Amino acid sequence: MRANSTGLLRLRAEFASKRFLAREYALGRFTHRRPLKILFSDRDGWVEPLARKLRLTRHQFAFGDLRHADLAGYDLVVPLSMEDLRFLSGLRAELRTLIPIPSPEAIDLCDDKLKFHAHLRRHGFERWLPRTGTSLAYPYVLKKSVDEAGEHCHIVTDEESESAVAADRAKPDFFVEEFVPGTREFASHILFMGGRVVTSLDVEYRYTTEFPIKGKTWPVFKTVRRSRHLPLFTGMLNAVRFEGLCCVNYKLRRGEPVVFEINPRLGRSATAYFFAFLRHLAPGRT
Image (cartoon, rainbow, N blue to C red; front, side, top):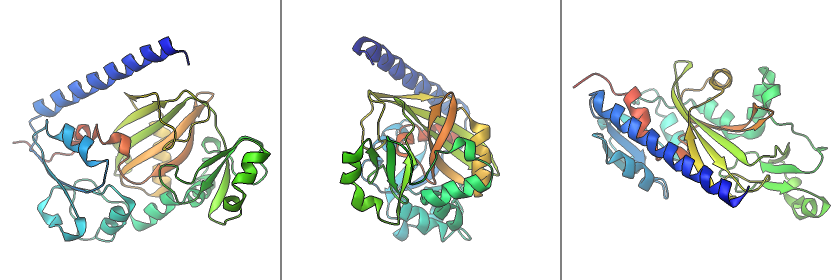
């Protein structure tokens, strides 16, 4: 990617983000919905972007330890980690929150990439999933089945790099996945309730390399954009019997999405835009 074209694309991305923010702030103000009382779990690196944008709204919000909070005192409780998500999932029967918490079964299925892929293949989604197996040609990806932010993800390009990860490859909780090249990767942030998409937005990551690892490789810039492929994602989420907030990570191959995973919680790249989801939830008018 040339420097001048990168600079132009970055400017366009910044403009798109500012336009989106201005539009959503205006819509949030003029719908006259009742302000919500929101509790988020506390997580380093996530609090600041959430708080910075929410301060410009009428909503009340706090961050804290969900295990010692009066959850009944909030309209909305949002877990930011898998640990907190699992804690709230155990309270689903008595918890009253405007965004549903997914079931333990749906969380487990999404959290384990091997089980997730196998489940979706059984439901007819093979076409939109990366191939897996032990005999894939270089380059391929070595992944841990339960992981976060690509911490244990490796791109294997030749015999030398394969030898370097031989110990991990031999472990039963690692698997080999086809590498889908491209300088663009996407996170589709979705609020899914009652078997349908209530609202969504996509964040596009643009890289200078064809071999990025999301979470490890720093993008040149990010762009917020309208969500595409929602009918496909709706089918996948219903196959998992999912409800709540999630993040679908995918790339494009010949214009079609290849889905790597569905994170069953709020995605980090949505923290700066989460306030925009709230106008779809606020109960009643003031």
